[in-house]
Image (cartoon, rainbow over the protein chains, first blue to last red):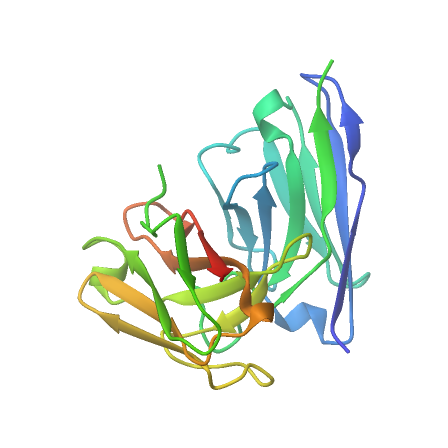
Amino acid sequence: EVQLVESGGGLVQPGGSLRLSCAASGFTFSSYEMNWVRQAPGKGLEWVSYISSSGSTIYYADSVKGRFTISRDNAKNSLYLQMNSLRAEDTAVYYCARSIRTAATGVGDYWGQGTLVTVSS
Amino acid sequence: QSVLTQPPSVSGAPGQRVTISCTGSSSNIGAGYDVHWYQQLPGTAPKLLIYGNSNRPSGVPDRFSGSKSGTSASLAITGLQAEDEADYYCQSYDSSLSGWRVFGGGTKLTVL
C-alpha cells in the first residue's frame, strides 16, 4: 500500500525556518517524481515545488522561489522541504504528492495527509 | 487569481448529472497539456479522480468522466450521490511558467 506521511509542521514566527519531511513507503520511491502542494486555510490548492526522481531537476512556484528548497534522499525514501524566511502568507497545510507516472504533468496520484504550518508572531 | 478558471460552486439533486468546467488559455490547456481532476472531501487530502483528460484511476466509479476541448476541460458526474459533495480541482501545466503545475480555484459541489 502506497503511503506518504508528512511531518515537521508547527508554529513559527515570521522570518523563521522549518523543515518538512515526507516519508514514503509501499512503492519504489526512487522511481517517482514528487511534488509539494499547499492549501491555505479555507483556500484552494497551490502547487509549491517539484523534484525529479533523481533530484537533478527542480522547479518552484514564484511565491516560494529563493526561500524554499526541495530535496530528497532516495536511500531513506524521504522527501523534504526546507522553508526559510517564512511569511504569514505561507500559513497552510502542506501536502507531499507522488507524480502521476503515466501523466508527467500530473501533481499527484497519491497524497499524504498533510502537515500544518502556521506563521505567526 | 488562478491560471485555470472554475465556477466557485455547482449543485444538483441526487441522481442528476452535473458538470464542472475548467477554462485555461493557449499556454496551458490550449497548448495540448493534459488536464487532471482531484476530489477533496471535507477535512481530507485531495484524491486523484481523472488523469490525462479522461482516464480514471482504479477504484474511481465510472460516474465520473473527463473531457477536453480547445482551451477548456470538463468534469461530469452522473447519478449524483450525497457522498459526492466535495471540492473539485482541475490541474494542468503552463508552458509560460517554468516547471509550473497549475490548479484551478476549485469548485464546491453541493448535493441538494
